[in-house]
Amino acid sequence: MIMTTTDSIQGRQATAYLGIVSADVVLGSNMFRDFFASVRDWVGGRVGSYEKVFADAKAEALAELEKRAAALGADAVIGIDLDYQTVGGDSKTLLMVAANGTAVKLG
Image (cartoon, rainbow, N blue to C red; front, top):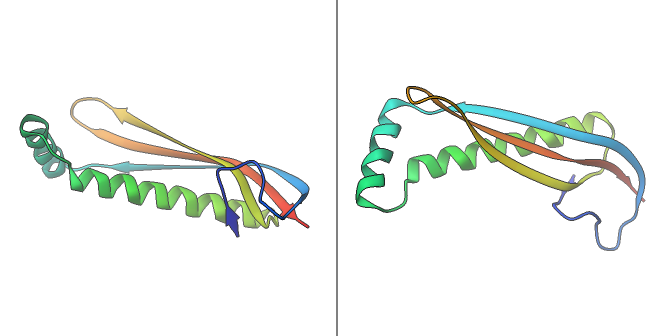
């Protein structure tokens, strides 16, 4: 299946628009990751453990988006948009990744 952020696919024509598809993934962090991230906040530098959480959440959201589009009989999802939010307070931080796009049939 073709997955793209663009509103069209070069050389292909959308013959049917099957609707908007969405997928939300919420992942929790842990206290050790939070502790080491806070240390990095003081000394500077990248926080690899959080980068991995973001990458995993994005991959899961896109996989779920593809699955939902396939269930509609789509050949592609166009106009994909990814949104990131944190949910929770100081004691528990959750990461939410929302993926949205338009499922289409291609000619």
